[in-house]
Image (cartoon, rainbow, N blue to C red; front, side, top):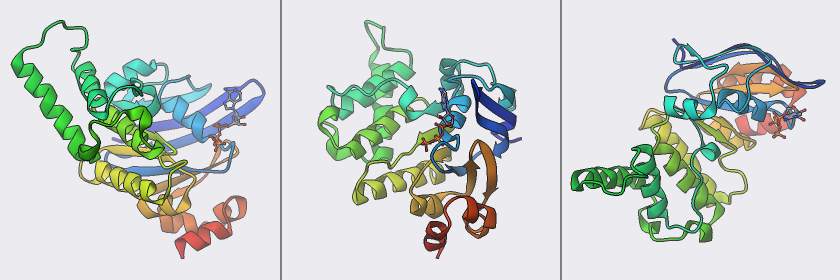
Length: 254
Ligand code: ATP
């Protein structure tokens, strides 16, 4: 059974058919990239999977259960986590405080006036785990609002991890980042997928990243699914080349 399964999914906005007849599956443990030109329907696809709005047609199943009309909060509890939709990053708090609040919230402790020493130790252990995975250990006292965009996005992922995602949706994770930050983010995504076994679907415009890390690539074009396959298959696909990236793809794959 696939972790995520879309069957003949479509979404209309008035006269605009943003997505049409999309059928795709994502297997547990996969690292899947969604690419396509501007307006192809990538954000709409994420909105459907994360429950921001329902599809106009078709069905979406997660872990074998229909989620077509399930609200985003319930989906978060079931393990579909999209970074921006989870608890906001608190810009005026430090990295440590953000991670701690996230862990306490995930454990349902935020409204408790008192927590036992044992529970506190459990919270601290979980925060330590997040620090280790995100490699934010040398930045724990930094105020998040004063950090670089790249670091803020890593904190955001740390917060997402506190919810134990089964499916992590990353919307342009390296957008606006410099070379070093991009490298750090790419490495983090790889480790989350490879070491932690988290299934990840990401939308990305940077083809070097897509072709460097994705197990499989789904190409959307004008609301339809143009192609799906491994990096080699997508790079060699004449329809993809003709309709979309052309020489850029060939250069990346070379
Ligand atoms: P980009 O790479 O530019 O972010 P995208 O692939 O994410 O593009 P979408 O944002 O999903 O594409 O948009 C697909 C189509 O649906 C576009 O024609 C867009 O104008 C339209 N669309 C998306 N959301 C809405 C909405 N809420 N209301 C009306 N039209 C919408």
